[in-house]
Image (cartoon, rainbow, N blue to C red; front, top):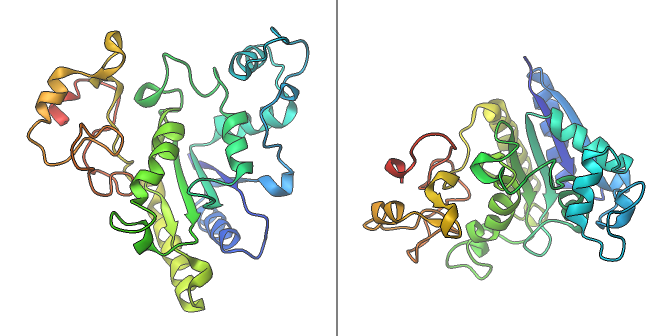
Length: 285
């Protein structure tokens, strides 16, 4: 069966490099028989703010509005507003989600952050019991594809912006992996606005080439839930700590055990850590 791909696209201009990257992805994926949907957030005038307007009908507690609880109840009862219901349909049907955007302030544009806030509601995208490697979307893949305004050297461990792996941790671990997605390595277009035309063309061609095998790529590595003790505040189990004691680097960018950060843990597959939810993970650490 052909894969279904959702591209969540966040750029104001159809003449942008982000638009070209989005168009290239649509073209190549369709040529491989994939079904591709695009959520063009600016064109849709997608609402970025998470408010009570996202719910139809009465609120459970209008005097103390709590977005997560109210949207969970509304989702269960079919009372979320139409734009959220439509985006959740797209997520539910997709095998792979690509987020295409320009990096703003070391993160995503507000309209895309609003998509995360509003679409990935409690119950639909995660619960306390179903998150990280045991998450609801564990059979789906997701990835970030974005442009930067700074050169690659500036996002290095010695660069003025700091290590890009650290910048990516909240997005890839705190949003995508948290919801259970298998997170593919990001596609980063370094400072295309400053690059000559031939360099921009080379960037797009490399993206096209990668798209040919994208659906078969291995995901990034994250430390699975079975390595943490839920009765002790989800701390890494002693045997996992001991197993990793003599390693040169930490497990991941976020779970580093006070050791040096593993190089490229958030940018290349198979770097430290371990991915998965079943069986014993301690032997793999």
